[in-house]
Length: 259
Image (cartoon, rainbow, N blue to C red; front, top):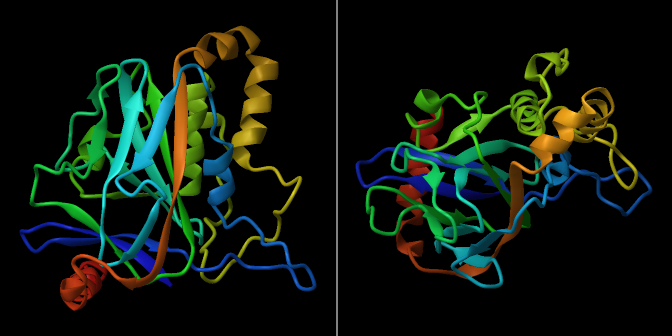
C-alpha cells in the first residue's frame, strides 16, 4: 500500500493517507469499483468560478521520498478547504491545518500546502502503487461543519464519509442534520464497496438532487457561492529526494498511528 506522509521537524509524524492500493474489483469484471469515500469526493463538483489545483510536479507523479506540494488558485476570494482521498476511500483534510490555520484566501493568489517557508511541516511520498485524488473546495462563507479548533489542532484531520457529505450539503444550501447516518461507517480494509462502477451514485449526488428539488431557490443561490477544483497524484517506483530518510519517516508514521 502506498502512502503520503506528512511530518514536522519537531518529531511529530502524521500518516496523511494510505495511498494508491488498487481499488477492489468485481469478480469477472476488469472494471474497478470506486473505493468507499472516493465517489463522494469525485461527485463534489461546482464551477461557479475557476479553482485550479496543481502540484509542484506538473505531471502529478512522484518517486518514493519526494516532497509533495499542492497548489491552489481561486479566481474569487473565499475560504479554502483541501481534501485528500486515497484509493481505499479514506478522506483527510489537508488544509486548514495546525501550521496553516487561516483558510481565508484572496482572489488569484496561489496557496501552497505545505507552506514551503515552514520547515516544521512537509509531505513526502512513500510506497508506489496508484493514484490519489486531491479536491479543493472554496466557499464564500466559512463552513460551520468544519470545526476550526479541531482542524487547526492537527497536521491533517481524518474525515468520515458521513462528515464529508454533511459539509458538502451545507455548501449546497441544505441542512447537514438531514444527512442519514450510516448504520456502520464502512472500514475500507475489511468492508469493500458493494456498489460502484458506471452508473453508481453516492450520497453527495443523492443529497444534491434532494436539495435542488426541495429548496430550489436556495440551491440556485448557493450554487453561485462555492466552487471546486481537483487533481490526482501518482507515486511511481524509483528513488526520489529524501529517500534516505524513508526509514525514519516510516517509523514516525508508525509511532503516530499508535497514539
